[in-house]
Image (cartoon, rainbow, N blue to C red; front, side):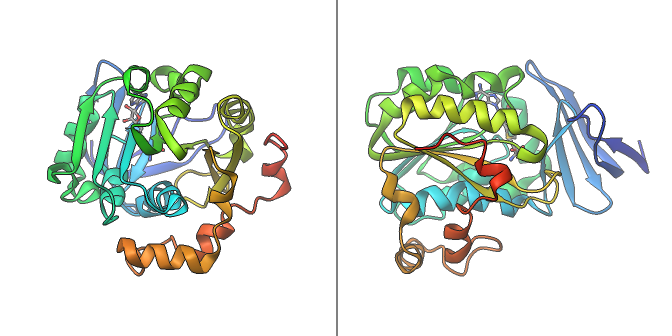
Length: 288
Ligand code: SAM
């Protein structure tokens, strides 16, 4: 297919479209339809079941916020569990942190990993071969059920939306197991959709996180290709002080971790500011 257009099918009555300069892959895996193409504007793009997952042009916004915010809020994370995230971009950002000793990534669909390695190699960079990384092809819900108690400091959930294979990653059972496998100051963050369009996702999953964790909130990132305004990243922590670490301390931690100056979206000020939510978003969160 040359010079045609692809329509994102996330919403029934509204969407974005891309010009396809060159189709690179179209695969039906055991879990989803995967398409990778060269766009006219955003570099290479990956769709899963017709929904944009990642573009080379703006992946840095999402990946930096999903990885750096929880790791720097925690301040001493050594063991990190990543669920989903088959493109490898979160793994790469997590491994940028000098203090991380082990990063386990559990992605259900080996075809996503294979196609990302083949067609989007810059997104993970050298992360796949980093000796601290362990990549497992499996279901995230099974992994969290069998993981030993207090075996990770941070959990990052970079999943598809809560329909299809991703649904289990938004359940009470999933969050209860995350609380169990996390250490005393542990926290979990997860992709939580675009609340202007997907408010139910934020509202309903925040209630579930609140049943497992004492501190539940969300923070925002403006990802150009997750259309509809801010996207929310869900936040569930055992320690409520973690989202209020002073900006100078965040800067100090980022410098020590090797992150300061190495980002294109995340800064210490954006880190703190991202937790300030407009009422149309905050109104969907449980009040403490
Ligand atoms: N950053 C993008 C976004 O938010 O749209 C990328 C998402 S990433 C590619 C989502 C990944 O989650 C997919 O590769 C999908 O296969 C994986 N996934 C969905 N359900 C899963 C499950 N139950 N266990 C592990 N991975 C899962």
